Amino acid sequence: MKSRYILMILLSGMLIYTGCSSDDEPEASITEQQIEKLKGSWRATTVTLDEVQQDDYDAFTLAITVNTATSVHYAITGNPDYSPWVSEFGGRFSFDERDPTAYLIREDDVSIQYSVTGTTLVMEFTYEDESAGGRQSSVSGNWKFTFSKVQ
Image (cartoon, rainbow, N blue to C red; front, side):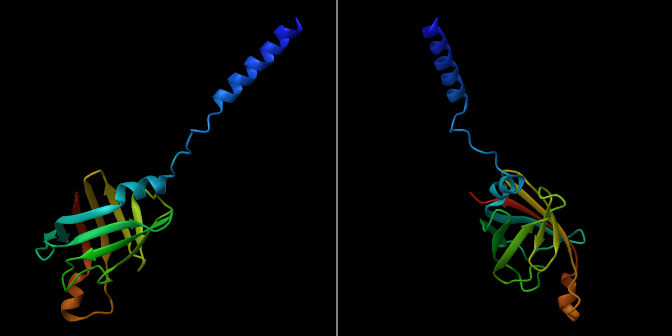
């Protein structure tokens, strides 16, 4: 009887031990999942300002790399002289707490609505350059960038 009781305890212990596998990885947070989707190089395929096609963006590329669990760095190439991208070389995006799956905040506090799939990234934002006059003010308005992932 005693050996049967010990055997039951051992079997119960083995079942509990195998149920608590150390191979279980914690699920990635929403921002970590979005970072995985966003990181990589993206080439502009269509750029519009107030729904008017912009032709100076044929060589525009956005490269997104990991910074932290809540923000990412970006680098740009092929940026035209007059552009809503404030930095000539790049900057940082952080995820908007309202909805990290749909909104990024650029380092100059511009809110960017975005959607991303494995091969397409769409970014829409309003840019107001109040300090510029003349031709510079022509970059103010509603922008939409559609990108394809560079393989």
